[in-house]
Image (cartoon, rainbow, N blue to C red):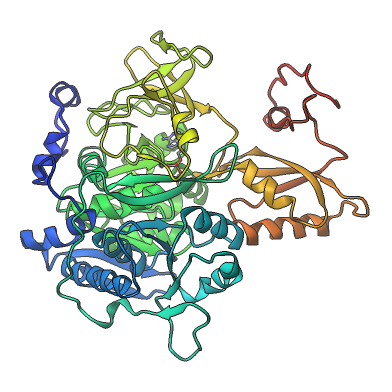
Length: 566
Ligand code: 6R9
């Protein structure tokens, strides 16, 4: 079935020029992801092929051919240029999974601007921090999200325009707002920005342990990795109907939800709706989805919905399943094999790596619970957690380390060189995760090497939640840790000490939860709040999150000798 041939053979003969040749790219020439995702496919005879099969929760449907993607991305590019957007400017895409988000990203890239996708459920504070940090000059959004932008406009003097893609014209536009209808005109030609390999393409914000979210800077050359990993790991071919369930607010939704499928000329399906097991199976049945890229939380939710539901649908079109974002538990692999007749293949990577770096290859035996092996052309190993010396013995836990030499590796954190440099040691890049290696070179994920919370595959910074909690009138101090959860793997839990004059109550708990949901996002909202008189701190005054975390997970508390107030 597969594109990839023998894995061992691929490793022996690997060279990134394999992808460059297929993309007809030669070093030093121009490369523009936007052009590759639309114009090139049309030029190769794919103009009438379907690029996007879209539907939403209300049952509205839309179809776009590659020629539609080409002309409408031209329209977006031309419109932004008229607004004064120039090469290198940051354009934020803040929308639900509407066609304007996918095609808009292609348009932004065509004019050499930097696409900054942000998850549409972000609240005003999450949005503000990221727009301010990036110095974003234009935000493209929908009516339903515009109020969040209005709230922070005063604090964002550099944000020149708020483009609304579904303005009905009936209501008055507010300050800095402009209306734009992507499908109003087929714009046949657009001067493509002559970007080259190292020209910036996307800026994706991701959460870290300390400090505010970091903007991960990618370049147009990332295409080379995204194209080849999609071909070999996702096993995408021209005949496939592909469904990537990720939102382009996160990296999976851009690398493998826009760039990879469209540069390969594949037809993809997008469902702009919340999760429902029934709706998901119906979508697969209706569009005859063949390749499905999803995430462990979704798989666990499907498991919970039961085997009987699966039987009500004809899912026989499916031929390859891949998962990303969190540890894929062995039970989920065994379950998918039983109900779909296909095992989910794990893939491991992150915002910073831009493309898959470790995975279960098609054709390579799956060890349920393992992430698989490094992609050919990616050198991965483990380093001792203390000395950073390479570990070769099987079974020993170490930090994952990668030689940063594949095309999609980030080029930096936006205006944060120190944090970027701190991710490297002796020529290795450390993604911040721990794993074990077995005798056959398979990687087994152990956990994060930091305090970042992975809830339903989305990274949440405890620091960001703690900072937001402090803005609540009742909160004196707080500590945020993860708490185990059967579906989402982890959820956010907050320990809160109240200011004098406030007393614990269920009402206050709800109020605090909602406060965070609105300010940050539903993902960052604590699912549990525990009131405490004070928080455990080190003698130097640092909150001991580690201790609270260990309690939540029923782990050994370790060395507590530095605690001030037991
Ligand atoms: C693509 C994406 C990255 C972090 C990563 C790790 C966790 C991702 C995983 C996995 C276990 C897998 N992660 N894939 N953990 N097994 N297959 O998810 O990017 O949002 O940046 O998250 O997610 O901790 O470092 P991002």
